[in-house]
Length: 104
Image (cartoon, rainbow, N blue to C red; front, side, top):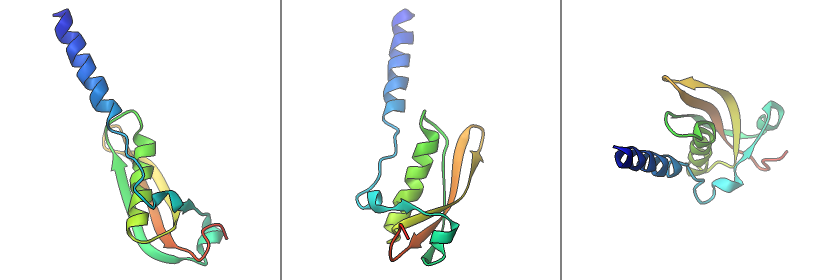
């Protein structure tokens, strides 16, 4: 019985530690901008992401949003809202942007 509990615990730890959402290539160039800075940027649409499981739900959800901005060819992200999703998840709603300079 004790070995079974240890085995189950080990599997859960391994699964949770492997659930981090990494930034894709090019996503490290995406910068967070404020409302004034985004005025001179081209909108590439709204990005909505969520993360339901794992210990890093907020950062995983944000990384998913940043990855999507990069996939759309953007270099900036404007955070519209964050909140809960489902029972214990985290949601991020943001606008993907292409700016001449993401740090206007």
